[in-house]
Length: 377
Length: 92
Image (tube, rainbow over all chains, first blue to last red; front, side, top):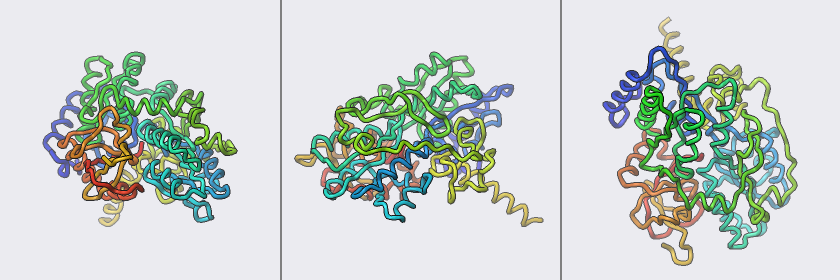
């Protein structure tokens, strides 16, 4: 319980932890998946596992957008970016993600015009300021980010900005959950539902998980107490043999989501028949494509795309870790060839990736422990 | 609201002011003094002042206040006058 004292209300944290210990059936082993990368990060940051009984395993889900992007898409984006007069714009957390011939940052060093933006609106602004160039925004993210890209495309179209396009890699969370549930080597008892994605899509899209798969889902906030409360809510349902969707994060998430954002997304995007996810393979209707009405601003329709497919390095077991079959430390490369400084697998690149989170908090903790024992000897 | 660009509002995060797009809250437009959760330069949802304080505390706990301010500072649109307070969500 090393972090308890820095929590705002340590007493409430202890109560929630006690309630979890009371509810967890000693004869049962619980496997709860937190879908969202932000939750994974918070769980490690706060050492929440130390507050849970040993028979509750938290399995880290596919909700880190950088982690699930296939390397071939990065290669494709960078291939287009090499063209004359191109500016490649992307969020900062894309910059160190390795493609076959290097990351966007390494391409920048070799002469590609690569810019970090904090918002798709800034990429459009770059296009306004550089009329002689073409700005391609390399879009990633789940439903939290997709409406912002959509609205930016609508602004580009209404202003008639012709030197701007989007290379769209937006994915949707529910088909990934379905793929994980369909995976034969997977056994899960319930889900901590994503927080920020749910501000857009609401809680309704998870209802089939409760209804058809008989597994409870609790949409959760990001504070330590939020996450512990969500685990209490899940255990209560499991204890009573129920499976419902509950919303722990009511202060931010509306049950119906953000209807204006959903409308904008529907106007600009349509579902792709299928899309490749790193570690999970091809998943049908799991990603967004730009509609024909916006073809002029769709980099994939505007430029020739190589369509690169890259197999992940054989030794890296990202897929197993992503599905929760292996813990990060059980991968052969973890902490050896693959570290946050030199990531081989994508889960090590983003701070929301389970390997990077595990490395930064758990791994460092155990290394420190080994060091102190050595000094006694 | 800035005339001619009705979708833009200025937010303040820990003293830093930047313009963000409020077009995704068209059904429930924020007004000056409201608190909103922002993500990649767009206001995503309105939240109460109390919840905003909690979110700020979380950023502090995570040691990510600096990162949030840096993100807001990085937004490329210029600052204006109407102030809505803002929170930051990470990219998902």
